[in-house]
Length: 273
Image (cartoon, rainbow, N blue to C red):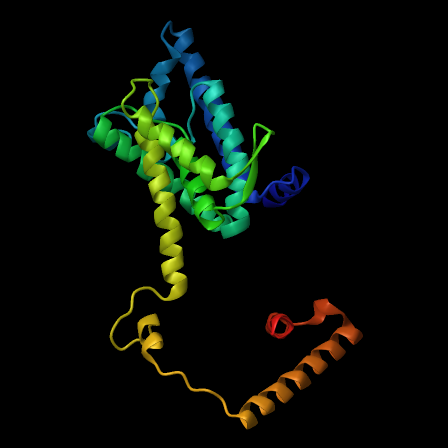
């Protein structure tokens, strides 16, 4: 099964994580309507099936339907809602995956969606469903990582992606005062989680906050700089050149692919110096 999924992902030029999320959203849409048709045959509205998929108000309903904490961010009941979110997920998810990888994509999709939709349920006391909060989290995280990435808006205007992000989030804040049946607070919550994800990742990569007894960034900054003597500098330069020659000789014999990651990194650093 995993092999078939990999082949389909490759044929469609899609990241595996993105394909998985797209497929899951479509599957839940089909499942909702299969249950909905059962209600139609019983002379009822298909919307009665929604309680098994969405986060239901009030929040205490989650005790009756605990699985909806997950299903709500994969569920859509109208085709246009599904189509728009899948289109956005395809574009933003692929971008996010290229920056942070598949594990982070899935992690952020689920937690941004849960955070945003639960926030809307708690503060607005309204039923909520859909992938919009999840996609907003991915979108904002990608924007913060590469804010000046150029995109073509409507195929005409070339703008940095952060401008689009500001515009979209601004519309959601404006929408908080409009009764348009859209979960603007969920979108904002998802976007906020995207911010937390990026800054949390940067904090981990940089070593976090300085602490006592730890080789922190703070302690590094307070250390005095020691300059090398001419002899030390020349010796290091000579050793580096010998190592470069050895790596180049290895490339000429076995090709660039035979180098280890450490050798590639060393060669790259020497090329910059």
